[in-house]
Length: 483
Ligand SMILES: [Zn+2]
Image (tube, rainbow, N blue to C red; front, side):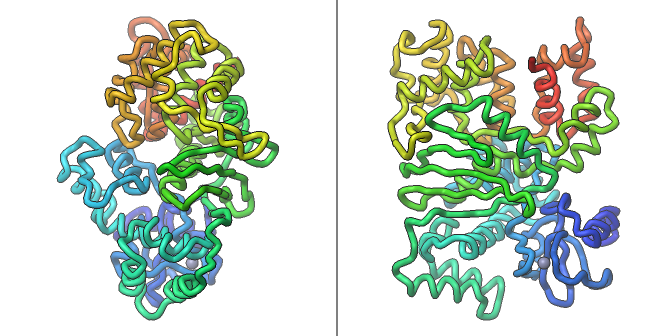
């Protein structure tokens, strides 16, 4: 980015103050050493004349800079604070670990390929390929540094065709005989690499982070047997890429990070697991900016002041969340948890990891073939669950988390028994678009004392002040209505 940009003054201050609230929003590149750093780098601060700023690691690497070994830019939370939903979806797809090799972005984003690419490079200053290649390399660096995974597994998990391809990339980009290649070599030579050990990874966020708020929210909605929460951690079972596992998450307060510990049969889909957890715990939020946008707003100022570091909890799995949301219509939050836990116990595959984690959440195929009388709820609601599951099996509803929010909301409302509030709620937590906004929502109209013919129009106008964080405003207002 240009140093004459107005932002350079803000970044200069953030760098000098080692301000963690800017982590991942920009990187400082040191011209003399050709190293790029996070704003929080503990190393001695270089002279102003020797630094320039970039908005992404990819932009820094494109300009010939290497990641700092001290502050580890690969650990910065991604920046998703963009008003454009399409750009958000593109970034999310690239970071999701679910894009197949050579798959056109248009296949998943349902927009013209050239439009996606030109918007991306115009706003981010790098091409899609440059961005993806940097993220792939940085993830490999993180896995080499933080896990005991086998060298070959790291290469394949990060999307390289072979271990040699990863080594070549590290050699070409970071030049000289770097320590990452040496570490890979050592691990290759040690054939007893500890494949069965837990994979432990630190996932950073921009502070503050209302950990207790997130944990409480998830606790109230827990699916017993599939999830478990104690005083310090969240635990759950999962099945991904046909590999069964479980993970737990705890808070590393002093490091502005969560600690993810994964146990699974085979180390598969690691980038996807990381991405899903980051969205589930909303690690990409920009709380400083959210606070600045909301703090003077008549409707939101008291809510944000009482909930600094607010996060909109996402979900591990969109289908599971949807079933819980449908089952929870017209009953209390606690009753919804009870009935969803019953569904998991009745239909979920037993995994018996320990006395708390006993089932995988059932698949759409399983619930699509169930009979309505097997559910402890009114028959019409049970039928909605069956119909929703069948629509997924038939391909009529897609649960792809990078799809357009409006198309998703329209598609699930075609199921009898799924109304606009449920559809918007699922979209907000599953798709995680930060500016998602249910403009006709009765709850929001009530929270803002709006009604009548012009209520919805006023709501939309008023909410324009909350851009691009309208999902956070919605979340705060919905919670303010909770009994
Ligand atoms: Zn550094």
